[in-house]
Length: 83
Image 1: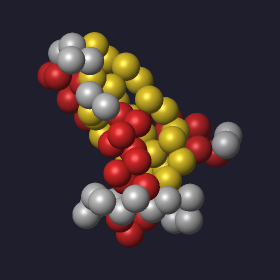
Image 2 (image 1 turned 120 degrees about the horizontal axis):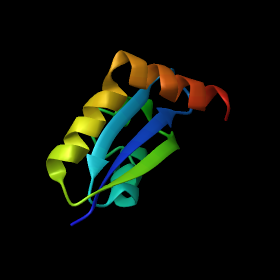
Image 3 (image 1 turned 180 degrees about the vertical axis):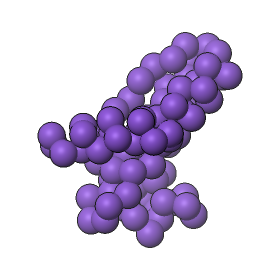
Image 4 (image 1 turned 30 degrees about the vertical axis):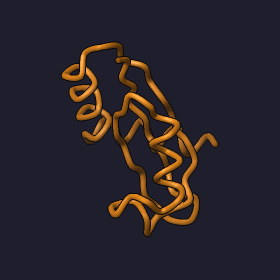
């Protein structure tokens, strides 16, 4: 199983969500359809990035934590500003 870390940004509000999944596009569709309790109030979303990690779930979790950190969120905001 291959894991990917993804970041999505609310179109209407100032909110960035970072997660990881073995099926990131399906997972992002769930966020956009309001089927995720945490992100439902912020839908719809734009994809900021999807980064394939490989078969190591621990590595995917570590990368997710990086993107959720202060420096990671700062980089994501920079990506968002360019869209």
